[in-house]
Length: 337
Ligand code: ADE
Ligand code: ZN
Image 1 (cartoon, rainbow, N blue to C red):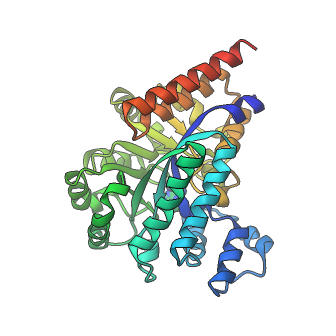
Image 2 (tube, protein in one colour; image 1 turned 45 degrees about the horizontal axis):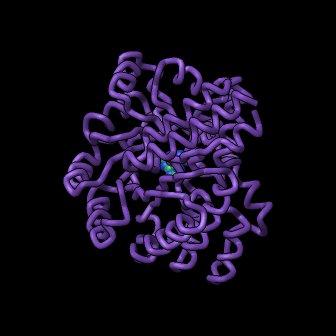
């Protein structure tokens, strides 16, 4: 199974680029930008990655992104992630970024997007990895701030496929962003939102009914509400599930308790993703290994997870067909071994 997972052609749909910032690169860029970090070295930084809830992580995550300043910093960050996922046979990735985490520090929107986009273009040319960029609104801030971010995105509209909603979920329901999502949809953006990670099923309903999202990020708490599960199944709403994130943020106590298999059994369109791999102990392969070991997933279930991600991706039907064919041929070859 280990080698099967490593060779599996994969699609990632939920990864925050700022969450791929490995401590080694963070110290390197801090030195380059003459920024001081409140940690002695890489090891003491890693020791701080002990979280008991989402907010513990977010505090450190926002602190880490302060190091990013120049277009080259965003390029280097994105380049390192793409090299890593290339080594893990990821064929397509949809990356989140948090513009407000940078513009609030005086880093122009364009510096962020151009650095990330240049690395994405290089990876497509060199590795054939295709990608899409999704800008997230920080839900702990006001809707007016999100509107101003949407305006700043106008000159980069062609580079950004969708908008998302992330940061502190509790007490920041999707409804708070109803108008800005309506305007984003009006401008042709696809929409996603984190919902049901720490929040209740009502927040998933809110994402569907107030924000009209195309996918739900996480969605774990849907299992508390059978009618909601039925709706998600019927409407084939994808859920971008993040197993290692869930155990690291104590959304799930132990990997053996992770709901992924129950979600698959219920017929939900679930996918496996890394969320913030530098902080949660692994990229795509490590997430697949963790759930496969703990939940004893079989080849068919792994194939379904990989195929679901292709179905849920924001790419055209030609690209989907190519990805489906490669996956199908890979699984067939494994069966014949
Ligand atoms: N921002 C980065 N990772 C996040 C997560 N798992 N939940 C909410 N906001 C985030
Ligand atoms: Zn996330």
